[in-house]
Length: 160
Image 1 (cartoon, rainbow, N blue to C red):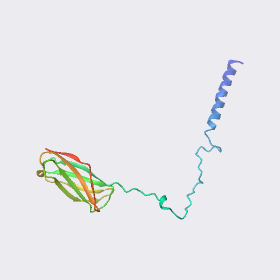
Image 2 (cartoon, rainbow, N blue to C red):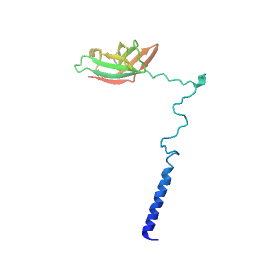
Image 3 (spheres, rainbow, N blue to C red):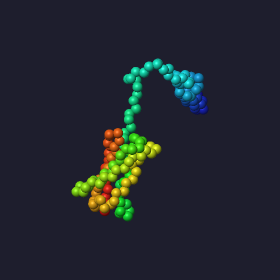
Image 4 (tube, one colour):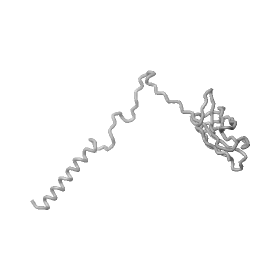
């Protein structure tokens, strides 16, 4: 057998192997889309009754106050804090911004919550800076509604 015949035979063998290997990737009928067991457009048939065990309960959203800003204003006249409550959209809840520091009386400012598009806004409060001694204060946002209370993680505020 000549070199040319050997090369041609080898090339035909490789081509045949590829064709056989790739044909396993296509389902019968030549449609490359995956086969489904349900007929097109079909939907489950209702049984007429549901057992309580089959009901899927959606968990209640987590209600969490979020403190967005806690800072001394540029002019030094006020301390500004703002925040919102995620997981609830309602008017009338009570937002309480609380500023604490060891050795100082706490400063608390209440603000009524207001529903906005995705959260309950606690707005912005600006207590007078004269109520704060110099040093590091811890600021939290509390939210009370329906007899339940929630509190944000504390944020540190430096009063110069």
